[in-house]
Amino acid sequence: MATVEAAATTSLSSEKLDFKKILPVFVIVLIDLLGLTVIIPLMPLYAASFGANASVIGLLGAAYPVMQFIGAPFLGRLSDRFGRKPILLVSQAGTFIGFVLLGLSNALWLLFLSRIIDGISGANISTAQAVITDSTTEKTRTQGLGLLGAAFGLGFVVGPILAFVSLAVSGNNYHAPAFMAAGFSALSILLTWFWLEETLPVDMRGKGQVKAEISFSSMMATLRKPLVGFLLVLLFAQQIAFGGFEQLLSLFTLNRLGLNASGNAVIFVFVGIIVVAVQGGLIGVWSRKYGDKWLINVGLSTLAAGLILTAVTPNQPVPWYSRAGITAEFNASRQASAGAGSPAGHQTPATQNIAVALPDDSSKGWLGLAWILVAMIPAAIGGGLLQPAINSMLTRSVDKSEVGGTLGVSAAFLSGANVWAPVFGGVLFQAFGSTVPFLVGGVLLAVLWVVARRVVR
Image 1 (cartoon, helix red, strand yellow):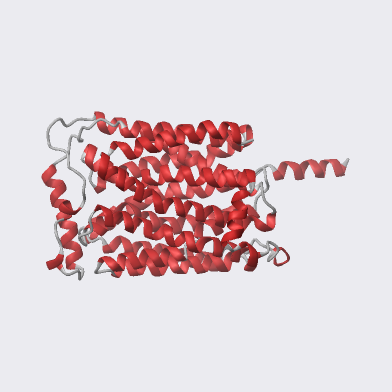
Image 2: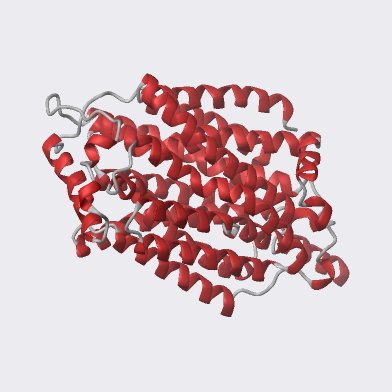
């Protein structure tokens, strides 16, 4: 009888997420992401202050993921061989150096260098995913991975607020948020060093045939596995659509609604709150009740709907919009960069370099803003569901000793998609207008939804 009760207790505990094991990595990732989310909303404007045009800004957006595409699989395999904690520390150190260099930048090439350094060492998230996988069971893994997404959502709520507080205090100096991001990165290193415990036992290390699996041919072999391969393709394709959405949203709202950096921060906060709700609670309930296949299908359909709704947002600037005010704000950012050491004589007004037409001051109203806020709801739900659900199904499809490497490959595919998303999206935006990138992404996801319903079992 006691044996039966003990077995029942063990079974029940395996169905509940152990938050004590997850809490350290959740806090560490949240602090790490605060640094990232302080920078993300401001990076296009930061580049514009050095005279970058829209094409150069797109290349800057691609610099980080292209380097992460190279570095993440190697660091993921190394985490299988040497443990999670040392590799996480190495990647965090690279992030810290990149942010410091970003804050010290007085030329455009230094912005590129800072993103390259951060990208090549950027295995933070994939290594953290491996830590979560080590600390969960198959029944709690989706919820555990979803909490990392919740950390990302919290970062997008708090990060933009902190960024604009630092801008207000520093008088619109874009170097200040970069140094704030470096401070968060340094804190994440300290927390990892003193708080996080190693989750991969010594006797489990090096069993994934690291030397063979870090090769390009081995990555292709992983891609040829029927279910794993399709999931990786699905991850890549949905990120092409969603990555373009993330990169171009601020330019879209500037063109369609006349929203400046502060207005876009409100959009980021709104989306972040929804993602926190989905990944911090709802995804755990839904995964246990419906399974990962259901989550993938719902994620694809809602994200497709969100992108299509965004594409057809009415062209109506917000009531407080001023074309002259937007122009003055961009010029002020240029002057702040010049004052930080950039050669002002070689700068041109940012509004002349970004190939986005500003709306005129007529026909102001609330319809456009209300429309895009509604569109953000399905977009945020879909974006919150897809990556945790796909990665959870990936981890269930491989041996435990290969989990870190598989998640590293997953991160590399995401990085590859993030490289091409701003390039494709920028070309479509410039050639055909602001509607087309989002419409194309929505249609692509709708097609993937139809295919996934047949293929994912």
